[in-house]
Image (cartoon, rainbow, N blue to C red; front, side):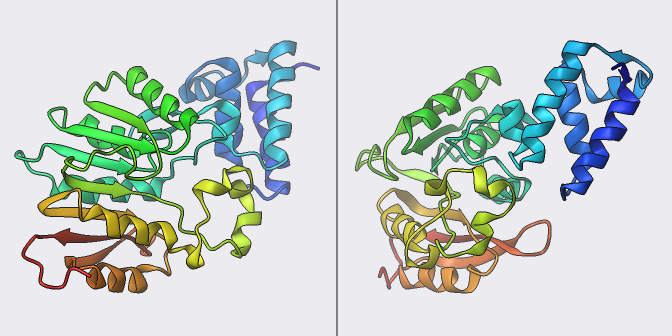
Amino acid sequence: MSLSIEALLKRSIQSLALEGSDSPQVDAAVLLCHVLDKPRSYLLTWPEKVVSDEELSNFDTLLERRLAGEPIAYIVGYREFWSLPLKVSPTTLIPRPDTERLVEVALDLLTESSSRVLDLGTGTGAIALAIASELPKLKVMGVDYQDDAVELARRNAKDNHITNTEFRQGSWFTPISQEDQFDIIVSNPPYIDGNDPHLSQGDVRFEPQTALVAEQEGFADLLHIIDHSRQHLIDNGWLLMEHGFEQGNQLRDYFIEYGFINVKTEKDYAGNDRVTLGQWTVNTENKG
């Protein structure tokens, strides 16, 4: 059956909308661009062009995966973050726009004298690579527990020609030497309670639970990072962490309990609490 780009998009958008996709137009366009290996502008310029039988078959295969709920990023193998095309895999979380808020806050705190940043739970390398791309003189280290994630982050650095990053495998601070000090430590760790019903909904169903779920009602990894970061921050260095929209108040209390000062929470683009940060100083009286 011969179908034009316009007709194929119309048909697939209707199917995606019926299955409850939040963005059927975008989903259909991304999948078709991937199959045709063309930019989005091509679909608008040549709506009457007929797709080949092979292209139609490939598209329908990918569409079925999306209709079954699989995230677009896993289907096409990449996601754009901070204008960087990043390869993704089912072993890593899919970078999300809200996490760009963490990058913005970090960049606001970094100065010309800043030298080192640590990204814990780096995954695809999204946060580390975004910061490194903006400040090429900065040294940015990323750590992840999964070997596959570390290799993926290294590949993303190479593909985006970013040379001021280093990625290591290990659990949180394990691969960091005791003497290593950083101006800023950033992290988007697991922070979801294992009983959260959202874990069985939408794209999250397909993402690695180990990168999403934490003990202590979602606070275990956040607390571990707050505690151990104090040994690896320079005097007046900053710790920044992404978290759930209902965790801001409790997290600020934890920062203060562990001796951080200038503690505050920044909101994401939807107005929800998303990034909590605090400053560590050797002169802090209450060090937890």
